Amino acid sequence: MLDLLNILIDYDKQLLLFLHSQGYTFWDGLWLFITNPLHWIPLFFILFFLGFKAFGIKKALFVVIFTAISAATSLIIVNLIKNYIQRLRPINDVSINKSIRILVEYGDFSFVSGHSAVSFTIAFLSFWILRKYYKYAFLIFLFPILFAYSRIYLAAHFPIDIIAGMLLGYLIAIGFYKIILLLIFKK
Image: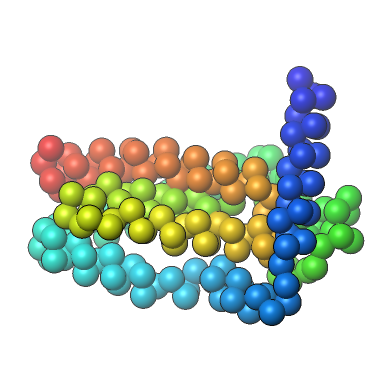
């Protein structure tokens, strides 16, 4: 079992090195912009506006509150996992960090990606809530995909960290979606 885990970790490192090597200094600024959570705030206002137009101010505000709680829950769970697993970030992993461009610096751990978990929690919740009101609600997934890829581009996370974050976000979103349906939409 340990051999299989080591093979998976080695493959994960090789995939990161390949994906990271596709970057060019010309694009660095864009990916640094994308990875900053503050730059996504306008998107949250758009989602709130879409919710307001679809089902009114009261329900939209409650959805925002539960979405914020789901995001906070994601962060708490991510930090518990990171501190338990303690996988080094690619930029801090001496076995590969000489082969990557260091564009950001972090002192915490890598597994799982908080950016991925939180953004996919928000995206899944938003999609499930808005899909019956908006034909193109699936476009919300562009946000977490770009956000997650920025973490690989910047060598802040390994691909498995991103995938695990997506899965964690999905699972948290399921729970909160059920709560929202029950408490806000009375279903």
